[in-house]
Every structure is written in C-alpha cells, then in structure tokens.
Amino acid sequence: MGVVKGKILVIDDEEALLEACEETLSYHGYEVELRNRPEAGIEAVRGHSFDLVLIDLKMPGIDGLQVLRMIKTIDVQLVAVVVTAFPEIDTAVQAIREGAFDYLPKPFDPEQLLIVVERSLQQKRLVDENAYLRQALGERSEADDIVAHSAKMRQVMDLVDKVADQDCSVLIEGETGTGKEIIARRIHALSHRRDRPFLPIQCSTLPEHLVESELFGHERGAFTNAHARKQGLLEMVQGGTIFLDEISTTGLETQAKLLRVLQEHKVRRVGGQELVDIDIRVLSASNEDLQEAIAQNRFRQDLYYRLNVVKVLLPPLHERSEDIPLLVDMFIRRMNAKRDKPLQGIGPDALALLLDYAWPGNVRELQNIIERACLLATASIIQVADLPEYLHEGKISAPMESTLQQARNRFDRQYLRALLQECQGNVSRAAVVAGMHRSSFQRLLKKHDLHSEEFR
Ligand SMILES: Nc1ncnc2c1ncn2[C@@H]1O[C@H](COP(=O)(O)OP(=O)(O)OP(=O)(O)O)[C@@H](O)[C@H]1O
Ligand SMILES: [Mg+2]
Image 1 (cartoon, rainbow, N blue to C red):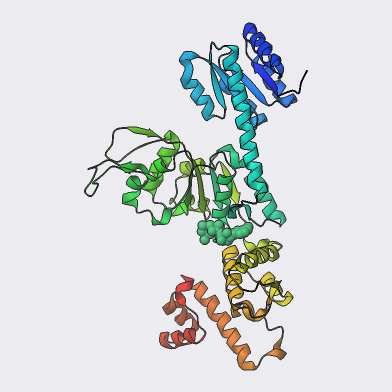
Image 2: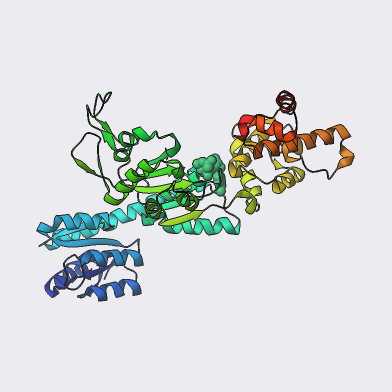
C-alpha cells in the first residue's frame, strides 16, 4: 500500500452507502472508518483525529446538523462534508453556514465522492498553508503586535484567542486607551471572517434620526434627499464583522433597532419592502460599565445580553506595569522608522518615571508620550528631559536638584492639573475652588501651558 492520503470518517445509517464509500475511498489510498449511528460517530471524533468527516444529514434519532455542531465543538479544524438528499439543498446551505466545507447530494457515484473529498482536503491544506505562510513571512498586522506580558493581559489574550473563531458576540470593556479596538481587530483577524470587512462604527457620532438609513440603507425616494437607493453599512459588511464602539452612547431608540437586527439577522431598507439577510458578527466596546447604564435606564438589558455573550475586560495600564517596558520598546521601534538615527532605547531614570505614573489615558497616553519623546530626543536613548514635565511633578524626592521656585512651579502645575481633571475642564468652577478670579486663574493656566479643553 502507498502513502495514506488522509483519514476519513463516514457517519451514515445506510449500510450500503457506508460500504460503497469505504470501497471507493480505501481503493484510492484513504484510511476509512465507518459508523452507522450518529452517537458512535461523535464518539469516534472524540477519540481519534481525522482529516475529514462525511456526515449524512438525515439519520434517525438525531439531526445531522446537530451532529455537525457537536463535531465542530470537539474539533473546529476538522473538515466536514455533509451528504443530503437532492431536495434538501437548503439544509446543505445551512450546514455550510455552520462550518461544513462542502456538501454531496445523494445519490452520488464514486467519481463525485472522490472529487468532493479531494477538493475539500486540498482547500483545507491551502488554507492552513496560507495561514502558515502569512506568519512565516512576517506579514503581520498591528493586531499581531499586542503586548501582553503581564499575567492579567495573558489571561485576556487566552480568552480572546479562544473565542475569536466562535462567531459569538463579544463585549470589550475597558477604560479609554486600554486597547479595545486593537483587541476587536485581533478577534476579527483570527476568525473565519478575516477576509471580509471589519468595520468600526463610532456610535457616538451616529445621529439618532439617521441610524436606520445609515445602518440599513434606504430606497430611492424613501425621504426627502433620498435621490438614489443606498446600501446600509450592515449590508456592505456582509460576511464580516462590525465593531460598535462606545455602544453606551446610543439612544434607546437606536438600541431597539440594533436589537431587532441581532435577533432577526435581517434588515429592511428604509422605504423598502424586501428583507435582506444579514450575516455579520457583532463586537462592541464600552469605556463605562454597561451594568451601571442599565441601572440608570440608559441601556436596554436585552441588548446587553445579546452583545455580552462573552465579555473581555481590559485592565487599566497601571494594573499591568510589567507591560510598560515592552510597550515602550515597541513604540520606539515603530518610531525609529521615521528617524535618521535609530534610538537605542530608554534610560533607567526615564523608565522609572513611566513605571511610577498613574496613566489615566492608558496605552494611548503612553504611546503619545513615547512618540513625542522620540521626536525630542537628542541622545541615543530617551532621557528624563524628553518626557513631559507632569510625569515628574509630585516627586519632591530630589529637592537638592531644584530651586524653591522650580519646586513651587512643579507643585502649581500638579495642583492645577488635578483640579482641572476634577472639574472636567470647567475653568469657572476650577477658579472658584482655587479661590481665584477667573482671569488670574486663566493667566496661571497659560503660564503653565495647561489647556482646559484637554480635561473635558
Ligand atoms: N496591548 C497593547 N499592545 C500594543 N499596542 C497597544 C496595546 N493596547 C493598546 N495599544 C495601542 O494603543 C492605542 C490605543 O488603543 P485602542 O485604540 O485599541 O484603545 P481603545 O480602548 O479603543 O481606546 P478609546 O477608548 O480611547 O477608543 C492604539 O494605537 C493601539 O495600537
Ligand atoms: Mg477605541
């Protein structure tokens, strides 16, 4: 016997069909296992590894689609081909949606069987090889460059990688700048939808009265200014992933509309009759705790359950300072591409300051600071002087290095920043709290180069 071309499991209640498959496939060099009951088939998948499974969709006791689903939960990689009677093409299509690779209509002859089996295995090999090549060639997207060295982030990444290809809704919660979007992109990149679009939708910028026509599209003449039929965003993303960013900012009306789409997987264009099937995955993000929004009746609980099949919680940067040196390193390497002379890294004092800071703006703030430092740096490494002053404010640890005036200035700046933060950039209120006239308060801000807008 020559080399075994692959190991195939056939699950069918018809003995005659099992025998026919075995004869053809083993004659052509495949190793074949047969099971005449669905339960036994599932058991076989649990116990052995196969390259391909052939499942009859119509068997007594248990529905073939059910068998397919169970097999997929045991081994997502396993190539499944379903066998259907000719009038059941709908079921076959459904099976392919649920992860079958191909289908074979009954009755079939040995030639057809071989073609489908060979084609499926070959395509699978190509897909595997492509994924392998992409990795080997270093054709990496930013989503591959996620720093996750700390225990907290490793846990997050384990979860993300596990659910990425499960096609479930994922809600990503985390403070501003913690990496919600980059995580959403990774989930998409690791899913079977990776070759279809990924579309971030900034919910805070969707005007309530335009939500429907933006998301669902409209027919010509549906309303004034609807001069032509327009496809909605959801239709355009067909087969891909949408990322609903800042989901808590949507109004209740929009939430009701989103919920309907998520339940029915269909949309009707504004002014249209036809229902269009929608096959997209929904990822969403929020930088506030949605439970709180629900408690305040600003967010629908039923929509929350739809979006939150899996929740990924991104820890704030100050809770994972082990990641800071690696993030700094990566941001420097990226910036080096824009410099004549590459920077070698960061000095220990400068790094110590970064490790000590509270990072209200999280990874994005760190990125901004490093990018700025790379532009300012005059030595071959980033030094304390290249970092913004507010990082070393509040540290009176080295009074010998500064005059009283410098120390006072530092204190003033730190006080003013904290105050503006507290008053969310409202200068009048901050001035009252500081016990100053608004105009002198303004002057003080100017002197320290502080801008109230940045705190709103
Ligand atoms: N773990 C990480 N590794 C590498 N880069 C990261 C990481 N987390 C975030 N970043 C980078 O930090 C920046 C902010 O990340 P991102 O936009 O994903 O955050 P966000 O949570 O969506 O922020 P916001 O709430 O402000 O929308 C991006 O440039 C991203 O590439
Ligand atoms: Mg974001």
